[in-house]
Image 1 (cartoon, rainbow, N blue to C red):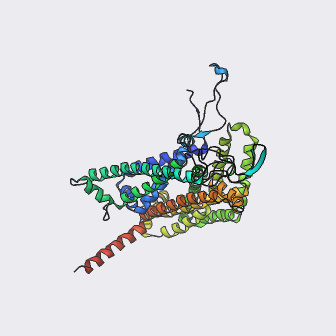
Image 2: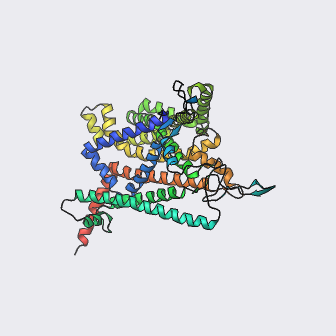
Image 3: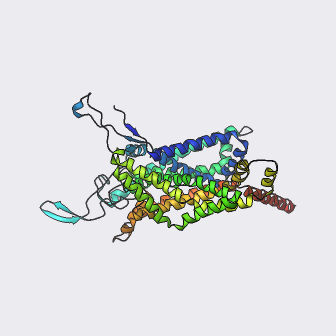
Length: 492
């Protein structure tokens, strides 16, 4: 069997590089007692743990969709001396998994959720006459002709999906129980270990939250896979693609736009913001003039001009791209850089204002008196106290950028039309929602996935911000002490 040819796209390299850096940071956290204690406050929050489960799922989907390859084509006349050719269409590991699981199918056009036929009537030849009727699906609802047969089959498929999900949850519960049993300071029986993390008075509420979140996720995935063997759970789009699969593949585009744009935005925002607030004087005036001039230009026009120039270059050099996916990926990569390098002014203003306040505090003045250099003060004393602002701004920008991509796609300057994205789905639903009968499932899928993704990111970032913000830690400590004193006075 001939090995496929792997394709390394720019965004693939970025996502896997960011994952590697996150793994190195996790290894550093394990070696640092201070960071380990800080992150333990994050994991102590059940809401943050639940949000982290869904974020890990989205990150896993994006990573699986970021391993691209071109399948090998059969040689002409089975000649071993012939040059090996590869498919012009790049596939990902996620595509392979979906195809092997039997959920990836295609139709000619729209079909409603769990439908037995296409959404629009067509002229069908029946003997010597031509009638207008709904044509049957090509790959869905095989062997099913009536609603009663569909309901019976869906009940069986749902039962299988629930049973598989319960088996996986039982395995996961056994793993969590073994962890609690292993870390117990005194010997425990298995039912006591289960009661510790699953009971009403749980000693480990985060473990229970993780188990419940994994249960919801596994149940949804298992039932979707079971029903998708013969149906389209949320119907198909205009090209006949499964809407749920399009939403899953749009997760990678959303993650790239949210993370790569934010990473491109952070260096100029942090460097200019801290420098303007710390040095003041002519440095502050110069940086203020720079970002004031930048914000005076309409953002959409500036981004449109940069994207159009980039698009002209791509179309003028087609020899640089061996597949359509490579060209679409470069367009996405450059779009993220353009969004990041033109949108750093808001975070820069916040960091400048906070640095102006921090530079006057006692510990900064004491560092200056002891002869600490400017760079050491900014890195060791000012930037750690700005980290909570950076974190919460990153999440807010992530949410806004994912939605901003829909506006750019509406203007024709967003991602390539061949690349699945939530913006493309929302833009297509403009005309679909105005039709009669209305096609609503495309917008519903984009809304549901965006809601879960953005909400999970917001909840998790809020817990991280509270754990890393020194002022929030002091407030939490004072609140706990006051609550402890109140409880002590109230005791008889």
